[in-house]
Length: 218
Image 1 (cartoon, rainbow, N blue to C red):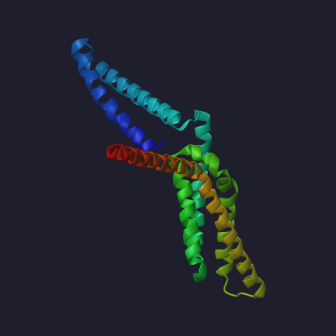
Image 2: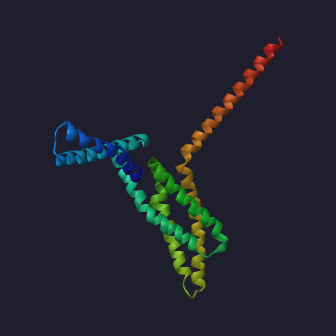
Image 3: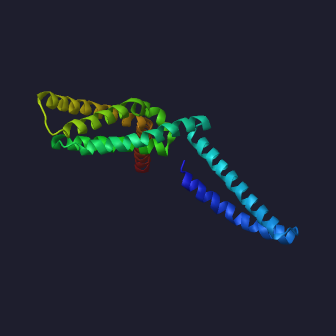
């Protein structure tokens, strides 16, 4: 749920109401200017919070979440944001040209999972492996690789460690790809269903056209 949008909508709704309350109190009920102002501000604040609560409840209902569930998901996504920034930065800082394309793809998938779960919080449950395991492993390996690769002197042991780290990152890329497909698995199933329905509709239409055509020739 976008807090900025919620605040803007709340202000748009409460502002005009606060403006209306003042002359109603001052001219209609004979209140003093100070009291009218206080009533106006109080009314505006009340409407602002009421509209915010309404939008929050509507958002939770739309996504099938309780307030407790949403706070849990929101907290985990917020915590992951800095990890994602660091992981992407480290992955793109690795100076190994042959793996550049793969690392760019990994960064793209990481950001996609984050954007999908942020936009639709319930998808978080399909991305728990990513948030609680694969993201941390990717971050740790990428930053460790950048640190070791930046050392002025390298030996055989260090080179082998860098090679092994790249191989492990390749394996993690496949796991993150599986995470992404898990996040969008429901969408894929829905698309397959729609395709089947569309094919059946086309088949029925074609059969109906053939039957009608044969009747005309009789």
